[in-house]
Figure 1 (cartoon, rainbow, N blue to C red):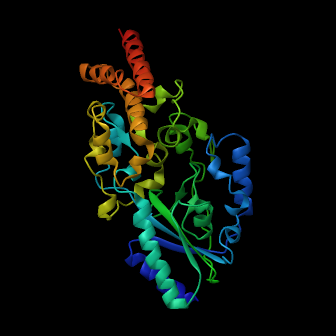
Figure 2 (cartoon, helix red, strand yellow; figure 1 turned 120 degrees about the vertical axis):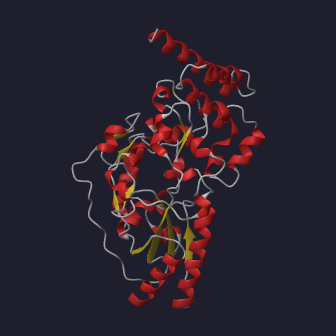
Figure 3 (cartoon, rainbow, N blue to C red; figure 1 turned 30 degrees about the horizontal axis):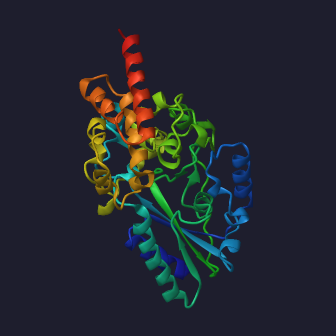
Length: 351
């Protein structure tokens, strides 16, 4: 079995994965932490996190017969990320770096399917089931148990050589493979991620409150973004990477070699005023096959409107907001109107 796992690890590297590890899942403690997180209200309205009951932290209930979970990681940071420059320019739109390229789900699922096929080829007719953020799976605790990294204080998995900019995927199998050893945390006393969070969504180490999280409001939620949070959102129109960008371990993060994960359509340097002009057809063109498609056209313009409210009070910014104030979507109009008022208030304060 050790030789089989070694062969599987070599093949995973050939497929482009950076790490492969195996765990014999015992996730009761992780399941309890999830329940406490939800009971505190920190899950906002993401009830999909708890609606499957114990299947999320008991893999054998989700896929009967599961004895081992194979976890893999795939780096995603694109070469054209230019992240600090984008965040520092309020005229530009900041999109979480994982969403600049093609949707990772299909890319990883295909490769995991090939990895699972190789496992069957090597071990015989064993059961396999592939997951990429597509079912009630506690992928981060599984990755920790498989030795792919440790849980950072920002609730992301950290790897000494990769930082945190990687995707995770899993194969559930009824084959009893040798388990890997979890690596110890190397966060020490550092709290840079907690201190840098624009909306203070990291309430404490390892405790993220989605009700304050920019990623939640700009990706998951379809509701109006709370006005109290809008100034802190800045130019972030899809997700937020601040807690990764500040993390010392991401100094060692490598950029991805995957062509499909490189920035498309110039989104790493797009200007908010230009994005505000996009028709629904334009939006479909840039978001097709991308995680960016998750928020839909209305959510996209809602977020752009907020970003414009935090941009310099220049003619291009104001013209963009006046245009959005005439949009068919009432939600877009509400956010654009708020942004115009916020621009005026900021201008008056600096007069």
